[in-house]
Length: 87
Image (tube, rainbow, N blue to C red; front, side, top):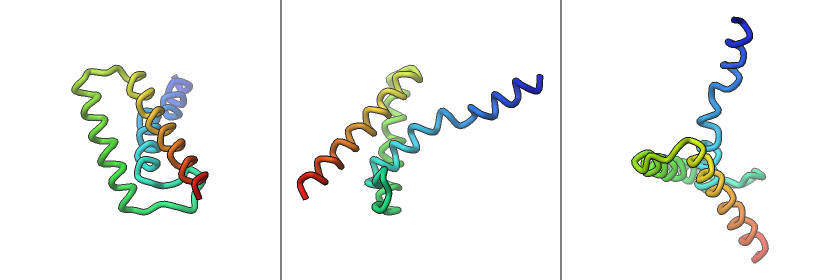
């Protein structure tokens, strides 16, 4: 019984991990650090919340939502890389 409690604690926040990272990256904070703002992070959180609501209304399963959040992160990283190359 003790081992089941420990394993539940380890995975308790997994559902919030990818949306939290996607919100911060979408808000303009660099994954590598050194750049970002509170206002951008708040805007990113609002956009991810809107995206979560839309995906819930569409009744998308949890694995599909994780794929969408991953795609958001990848798209933003590609945009940041392109911006860095143009400088």
